[in-house]
Image (cartoon, rainbow, N blue to C red; front, side, top):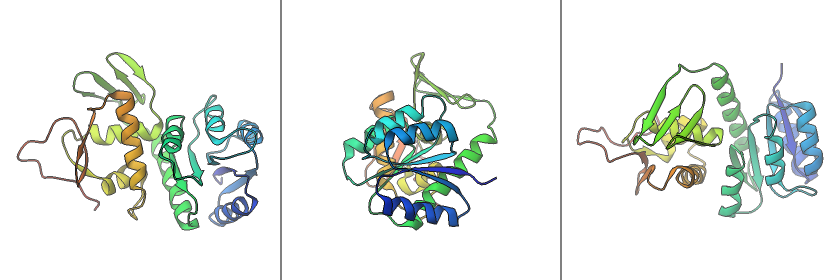
Length: 237
């Protein structure tokens, strides 16, 4: 059965072009031109993924994202015409998994969609139950996809959780943005470095400024600096 994608976009030219390209890739696509209709259609149709414009009539994209996530989590790829860091961070905070800034290429859109679909499939396959502890204050229940800070549950988006686990599985190791884009997002073309930066900022805001360490000119690491015998930054293979 074809995966269902709901496109919530009020610019008809963009919406039609996106729908045509996704249908050519084998997806079942429905369109919605405003926020209220998008929320209702998402509830009725239960898409596997939502492509959501930030600026919409009726309800804006942030409120649409909040409302469609109330009943069940559905991956959201947010589209924005603004290059506004605050909007992007807020979008990720309310449950968006990724974003694209207009104008974008259809090739990049399809790559992002396919990466999100691969992550859905990987999660459906399950993982062995295990818990990772970070600095004694953060407990990550990988199987339940739950994070606690000093015993209190912290709500992370699916992408934030995957990024945290990827770093926590190899504490102290330094990862380039390109490596994280491969491991967490499934991108192999090197695009999307700002996506990594935005998610790191979100993790710091929720778990503390010191949870992810910046290694200037290289990338990010979790926890203390590595020992002398650490093999160094991890690059895409």
